[in-house]
Image (tube, rainbow, N blue to C red; front, side, top):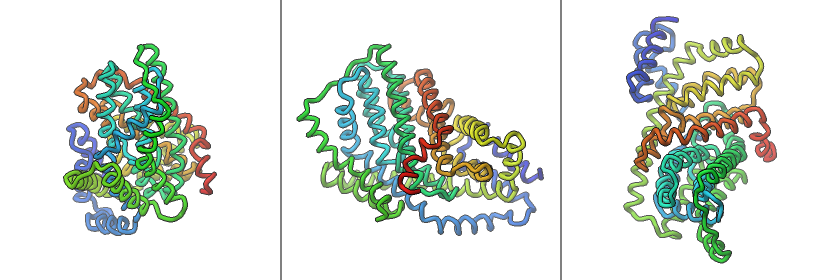
Length: 431
């Protein structure tokens, strides 16, 4: 290990010790490396050229701001309340109904936004308020909201899957389809846990709507629900690319909010545009910093070193998947999901290719893994969002969410070792 690389790693470790934002930390570490390195190609000019060349040819990345824009629209108008009402009607009279509604609404909302944070911050405030009014424990209400938000980027569309597709070359269409069954499995598992807790704590039952009211509510909800058909139907019919589908779905969401639900003003549009720009700006900074970081990792041949090291331990792909899952679960406890995607996935991809592991299967599994990281203490972002919304002490949420995390990890390992659960629908579609 040369001096530049040693300083690079030491400065990155210091980032976590003094709690510098991860994007800024990666930038600082990279600047230190480029200032000290004498290796050919290790200049800021070279990495900037590579970044601009690669980003300009990556059309799929254009889908990211479009999906962010769509998520902001869905979160701002009447759409979220319509989804909540429809999910409530679907669940009906079950004991602990609002816990089930929380999960069902997340499944529906995940087909519109592809963002766990949008789910937790948009639907979350409505769900937690309703559960509080019905006498549910605040810690449990926040925990089920955070745990179900994990489904958001698993069921298509999915922003993390777009970045994974860019890094790995895997088909974005196959990844989107591969997330459907896993997302539903996580939802069913959480609903099973909710049923047990609701019976144990005697949480209240829901209300069953008369058939006539249910049908009327369904028809009012259809325009919002149809956004999933517009998005996925456009992609898999071959009419549009995933990037074009993002634009189409965003335009559709805007039209539905403005003309059908009449819940979207010029002021709302301004707020949505500003929020989208802020989110995309943050993501862009993180992507740029992570690219410089990954460039250094690549020219120092660290992926090959890691692959050789791990293959020296085992060449059994099932054992390797266990090791990678455990490592990424640990990373998720401390590091931002996007940073893990952009920095650590390129390190393990050569290993995945060497062992012949399907890239679509691995992509879906690792996205679920990282989403679980958003709920794990001490730095799970979903914990902080739900705590902020409800003013609930973080320790109360952590105590309630730990069993839910165990349920989701059980599903994760089921998907890891039964690849057909992920690949069934993509193979059926011809991928």
